[in-house]
Length: 123
Image 1 (cartoon, helix red, strand yellow):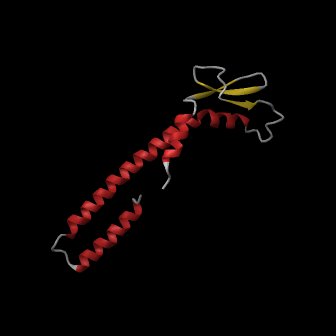
Image 2: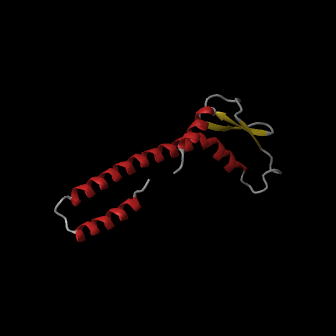
Image 3: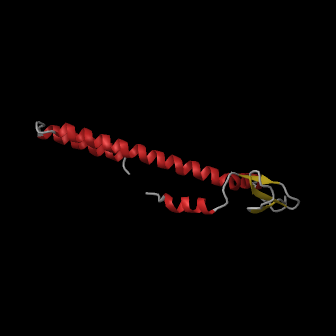
């Protein structure tokens, strides 16, 4: 399972976002929105250096990294919480279905269903 703690630690230690691309004479700066010329990172703005024509896309990716990463971490945490609820519901259904009056065949069918369901929502 992906450990989100190191990602959150790096996000919390970095300059808070959102960031934006600021235009410079010889290079572009990735700046904190509303705080120009802080210069979080400099990106060369030279057509000779942009061999693959991806400089603008690279600047956009870097500038949006803090916001995008926080959104991804939040979505992972939301999905993990949803997964935990689904696991608990599946376990409760399994426990309820088993009861004392089920036959071996019903238990085997329930086992198969439960194993299949857990494979869909596993941690």
